[in-house]
Image (cartoon, rainbow, N blue to C red; front, top):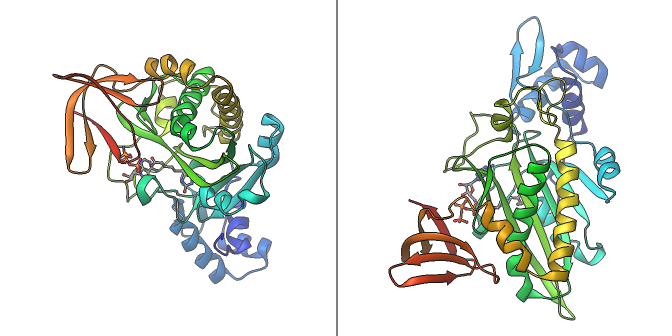
Length: 331
Ligand code: ATP
Ligand code: BTN
């Protein structure tokens, strides 16, 4: 269930998102609340991970420009029904709890997740307005066996969609991460809700860092944001007038790319995705280790095979490994 969100906080954020300073008095007047209440809500907004400057005599201002997600704009661009929850526990959880009422392709997005999660119950840090949190329900007629390749197919679709929007240099780490310059830019999580009549009910979720503050805590590995990538190119078409990244455009592009890739995967299988994955594999031909519980295998990464297994070359030759408990690390 979504945490209870005071509407006032979202209204204050919409005001601040217009840019410039807004005094406590002005905000209070517009919302019909006291200055003390405004100050309390600002603290809550900061707890969602939004950086807000407070200057005596001037008021409050966002540290960076913010264009809020707009469900209608996204729906218009991608032609799919999109549910936008400004604040939610987890977009994956939201869909998982409702699969019975959903059609394949149904999509949920959020500005903030209080309980965003990664693989094996790890936390996905999800500050408000800084990133993308996107989940899609997919009914896979071929059943569980075919679910293995899903995070790979979706990852390929995202990198290719970025390339078609003029974003170069994003790569994949088996099985579910997007990397930029050896730092984690995004993660994909595929969760199974159940099986009925052979079909598997799956929820695919992705968190992608767009403009996450360097002050963000709670991430125990190097990470990247799309903003830093685009800063290297002036006037990138994905950047809006105030310089922030157009998350609505990105979101629509990813939804379309996922749906196309998932349909192709259902129709033709993993075959055509192998070469597409290997072209953008971050570790291809690089030394890596695979961690499986207490066991580690050292070798050279050789891409993936048609089952979606990761290939590693050791002195014994090329071995294929697959399964949810394997972690790949560069050396
Ligand atoms: P593997 O699954 O191969 O072990 P991993 O260490 O990336 O890889 P995941 O479960 O895929 O683990 O992802 C969760 C991890 O991602 C967290 O433990 C944290 O280190 C990191 N993380 C959490 N939030 C973010 C974020 N917003 N951006 C980048 N990384 C994050
Ligand atoms: C990973 O790297 O382990 C996967 C991270 C997946 C995070 C996304 S954000 C949207 C969706 N909702 C979640 O709770 N998790 C996924």
